[in-house]
Each structure stands twice: as structure tokens, then as C-alpha cells.
Image (cartoon, rainbow, N blue to C red; front, side, top):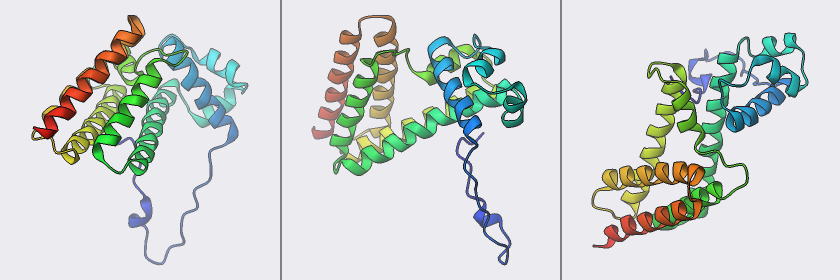
Amino acid sequence: MPIVETDPIGQRARDSAPHRVLPPAPAKIRILETADRLFYDEGIRSVGIDRLISESGVTKATFYKHYGSKDRLILDYITGRHEHFVAFVNDLLAANESSEDAIRALVDRIVSTIESPGFRGCPFINAAIEFTDVRHPVRELVLVHRDWYAGIVADLFKGAGHPLPGDAGDEFILARDGAMMGGYVGDSIAAVTALQRIAERILADSHR
């Protein structure tokens, strides 16, 4: 299941008028923002539709008009988290000339996330834990996100000159996952320090 929809321009007839994409309705945005906060803070399954409606300040009819079901809202939540991170990575790549600088900036972002107030771990890992069926659409979205993330990291290590960028990316992702989990349930200082140490060791392999 793709996370980001493809541009429908290529599917239009040559003489058709351009399709004007309207911005989301304010109520729809408010529902999604409320879901983003509650799903991350308290868990997806524990937050009911009535709570979402109440805290969004919308009517039940408005909720169902925009989402139809909680399931669709959950998928939009995961999609939104992915798109937000894609935008961050694009900005990070644009702001750093070298791959090594980009990797270190990525580590810095992970560290600041772990040390931020209200940190509850990785939203994608949390979602996967709640939905145990690997065929569930939530799990499919999480897998797409993680495959994309692994590809980005492998490309960065390739740019840094690592002889085995795929292996380096796997190590980095594993260290990142461990830091996110350890930073939430255990000693956050130890978690981020270990991540920084592992990232530097992997980068050092690029110069051997």
C-alpha cells in the first residue's frame, strides 16, 4: 500500500483541464491533529471515536463525513507521520553538503527527539506493536516507511564511502531502534550515547 499518492497528472486526458486540489477542511485537520496527539501519547487502540470527536470539537456527523471510520483515521495518522519525516529528511539533505554531515545531523535529530518532553518511543514501532497481523494495512504502512528509511540511510553511507552501505544502514537502523526503545523505557542518556558511539564507529569504517 503506497503511503504517498502519485500525481494523477499522467492519467489525465491531454485536453482535460488541470485538477484543482482543495486544501483539507479545517475540521478534518483538527481531527487528524487530535488523533496524532492522542494516538501517540496514549496508544491507538485505547482512544475511542467519542474521545476523538469530543477533543476535536466536531460533531459525530462531521467526523464520519471526513473519515467514515476510525480505521481510515489511523491510516492517515501513520501516513502523516511518514510525510512529516520525509519532509524533515529532505530539508536535512538540502542543508548538509556531505553524507557524513547528513548522518550526524540525523543522529542529532534522533537524540533531540528522545530527549524531548513527552517522548513515547517511535510512533511506527508503537503502531506495529498494537497491530500484530503483518497483513494489516497499518503494518503495511509501517513496513513501507521502514523500507524507505533504510534506503535513505544506506544511500547516505554509500555517499560517505562505506564499503558495505547496506550493512551499515542495517546496523544504524538497529541502533536507532534500540535507542528509541531504550530512551523511552530506560536510561535515555545511555541510549543516546550508545547511538552516537555506534554511528561514529560505522562512519569510521568508511575511511578504512
